[in-house]
Image 1: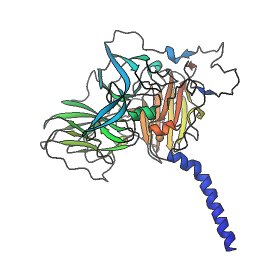
Image 2 (image 1 turned 60 degrees about the vertical axis):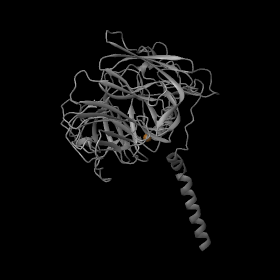
Image 3 (image 1 turned 90 degrees about the vertical axis):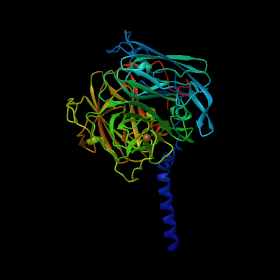
Image 4 (image 1 turned 135 degrees about the vertical axis):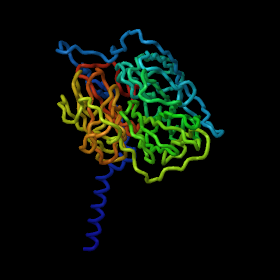
Length: 487
Ligand SMILES: [Cu+2]
């Protein structure tokens, strides 16, 4: 009897372990997604090597709506002033400070690549040349609202740029703000190896005044080196007592960085590049900055001379501003910054109870959306002009910074409660397990747009889907046949 009981117990335990296995492996990231040979991301039709010859043509002949190709959606000609840049993707050794070097994949020999600083309304023309990145490269302009063909997603908006080839991006910087760029070919690998950079769009008219304007990239190079603006020991920036400083924080890592501001009161003036309305002065709060997200803080330099903005968990991710006595650090268990009740509301007519043309619910697991991954996930289908509501529910797993290409959305509710402070317009929303957010956007930029987790390891495992405009096609294909593997 005792033997039987113990056997039964073992069998139940074994069954439990087997049942948990997919979850465990998923959580550990071993459950690697396999790309089919060819996928058309406009209609999710996939073809394996053994597929029949008759490939489905999206739309078909005589379709009521004229099919439009993403490849033909370009920035129209205008007399906007042109700012031209050239970026060469190349492998090199970089100096990461403290007498150390590291292998890196770079734009123009540095990581982060050159900071592109432009003015709102300018026409940005960037010629990307791939010198020696074997697996091809692209540039995605993270957070920038631009025409489909310029979005830089391999296999969706263009083919990967192979060694010896070039591609020219062209778009008008419509919105001011803090953005960044990174390769969207094998993103998780390429961004980690260093193919990233900053894009700062200075506003035509500034809502805020400051004496100094700095941008800071938080980076985890090769998954090995924690770097701030490419340096191991952190970044040193200058400002004198009494001067006001705008510090633009860009989290290019996949992990959440809990950022503290020591030595001064501050305001969070912008999230994902979009200004907040009448932001309050705060202090002693940790700002959770998800992978890919940007937060701009504004503070006045104290008489004591130094302000430090740093990550709670990764001390190497730090910007020291000014010289002087090291400021007292935040309490480890200080409260988190809460954007849902920060600043003053503005009536923009976009509310949770307005009429939406379509509503979608996306349930997030460890590396899946609604239990599916990558091309198995049905796309969100929209028509130009429609208002779309998306409800994100984080059921299980690590944090997910969900990022939408080509649009800004407005955050409507958190855990069922409408936001009470400044409107939050963003290209990403960070969810911790148990969180629920509703966001809204207008389908005002026809194309094929990715919606994915910006923990790039999660995306590489399939936590990535599409927002597709009805009738829009693409000549490009994702898969092992073309070699376009956007992640
Ligand atoms: Cu994720």
